[in-house]
Length: 284
Ligand SMILES: Nc1ncnc2c1ncn2[C@@H]1O[C@H](COP(=O)(O)OP(=O)(O)O)[C@@H](O)[C@H]1O
Ligand SMILES: [Mg+2]
Image (cartoon, rainbow, N blue to C red):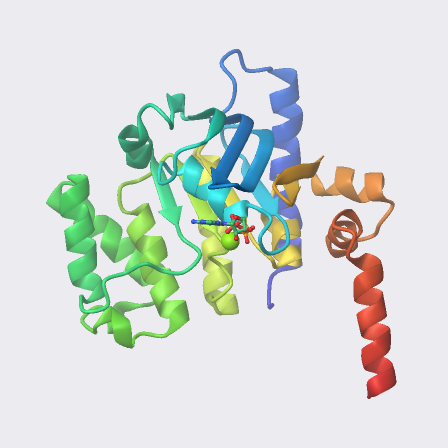
């Protein structure tokens, strides 16, 4: 994916240093995001089964897990979109069950599939969202210009969103989430549609975001990407967090060389994948 590995490691070091510092200076009021015993049921279906995790200021936390493991449900709860069934979720000190509106004010949520108004243009959408969020006109203009240039979507600003490619829609969705200068960014599989250059730009942006002490929760299937940008990850499987730590910690715990092997091992898919690959090899 055309990433610069030297700068990647610099960035990882920033993360590791931060974690060490945060251990030395144990915060008295907890992290930016505190999830304790979170349960979410849809009818009798248990989507999230009592998970707990903390995301500190200036930290990028990755939520990794196979399809249907509860990532999107958790992220919607963190963003004030879904109510928890049980458990305590504090986002920037605000209880999501009690004050979801205030949570929405400080969170930028980028959904798995861009939810946009197809018959608006990106320009119209940005103005619309800016209006709803009460962003002053000149500030909105500056932020739109900045992100539009960063993601190189100038030429699409006046086209209907419905006619844009998935990747461009994802960029529009991302910009929409960033307009109100959120303290916390919740990104659900939102880098998957981006070309390598845009993914790189986004990565730089996330790193700047965390330098400002903001927090990011990030879910992805692209494990090398998680390995590059996350300070810590939680592996979620069937609604439970089954492992958590820095990438290095997970690798050493699982005695595996890379995150993909760790992930497959933890989700019990390693043998299954091996068998499928063997069967494929035999079939070819
Ligand atoms: N609105 C809903 N109604 C019923 N079941 C749901 C709903 N949303 C998610 N689920 C179920 O909850 C589980 C977790 O889903 P989700 O959080 O979307 O997982 P992931 O994002 O990890 O793929 C899945 O089994 C899914 O089918
Ligand atoms: Mg999902």
